[in-house]
Length: 262
Image 1 (cartoon, rainbow, N blue to C red):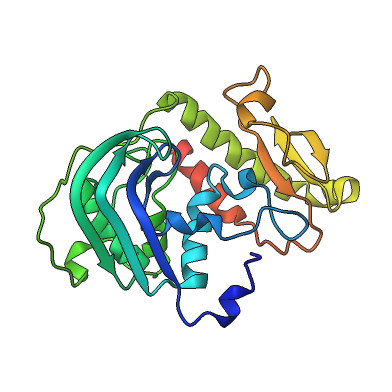
Image 2 (spheres, helix red, strand yellow; image 1 turned 30 degrees about the horizontal axis):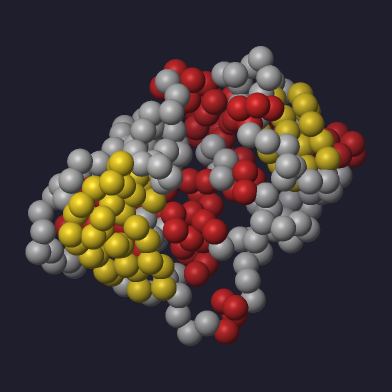
């Protein structure tokens, strides 16, 4: 990841977030709050849709937390938001949550929202992608077990009714997840040929084929529009880098497909 040089000189990182559900990620608290850190301008940065990508984003967020390690994490729950990050329904909670670890703080925040911190896709509120807080804990960074967290509260869960909005049917989301993983593995299998043809360009893959390539995908519009008539078939965006500096987690796609085969 490319991040601002300000982190080199920073004595500490603080993450302050609102208590909200998120249409894509289920929740947005102190860890999801870090998503805006990588720059979006090329060549060092990536367009928003590159990291804000099905399957990929659930692993990007724990990475950013591990890199920056916020030592003070505050969830503003004086008011919260049900449904989605923009244009959701307001909730009055009259609470503030603070902690010294982003994953533990978010775990308590999820609990107070009425969510199970150990839940995962497709259990609400994770209707589109995996629980990034759980993934961080599974990697050994923090915990989603309230019994392992030293915490106190003057309020009881749930603070209000919370859930993420369902933007698409569960069948459609499952198809998107499955076909996203398939495109990632097709890329891995054909990486040499794709590098020869598209080196240092971005590509969109769908149905096992490259449906777009170019130096900058920033202004192409939404994947919903780009998918054409194949609305249930995911578009997978990738920078064709011969050295694979990004370290794409192809094993994640393999593990995800095993769930569909089970």
